[in-house]
Image 1 (cartoon, rainbow, N blue to C red):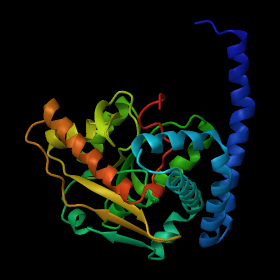
Image 2: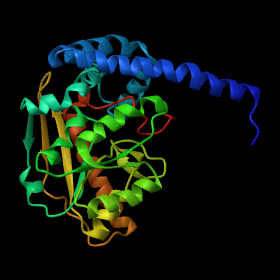
Image 3: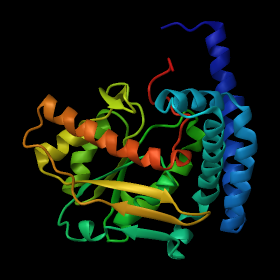
Image 4: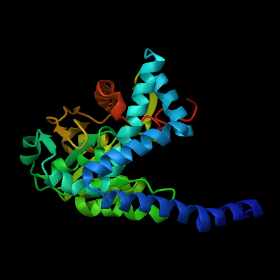
Length: 298
């Protein structure tokens, strides 16, 4: 396949200029936050993103998504939610280099760990990008379980080191999104690992499942595997209680259907989306609204 001169120049610009600059900025923020005391990093990054992010195109996208999902909110409430959402996201960035120390300090409350302690094998923990979702897997880690994860390659490969740093903490396998992930989930479960999945993002190859009353492309592979292999599914809810205080709640095992036929899988996927929706409605300012959950046409 032949490439035009314009495509070649864009590729070189991306690889030689854009990616290194993005990596320099990303790692710079990471190590800046790492050098700061955790509470100061939390406040500094939250304040920085709270000021800058509303000036970007992502804020308009977040507003469109919020309006699509919760049309009854007035403009003032939407503005409050989104500004608080950006501050929460900034805090997530500020906390990222300090995740282990925050857990060690006892600033994360874990609820429902008994559901994991009695497991003899692996299982699925399913959550969402809410609160600080990076603390969810620690529920399994505190019970001695290794955690496996699926990742989507970053657009900038120079930043991939941040992803691998996180997985070193989890101790389990990591699989690239796609066919590798489908096969990897079964392998990780056989090893007794907990498969942590955040299932609130659009999956183009997923099925259409209602979310806030609108169809949203949703992953169902974990549901099929859980039913066919009789592997337990648990909700993994993460909540921010304060600046550096969190609660991670593990639910009792979700009731699985007897068969993995399309109707049964769709019914359970709808139930899961409804549960995640209830979390978001409780604290909408803690969810990641800029994501194109309902596609690009919103």
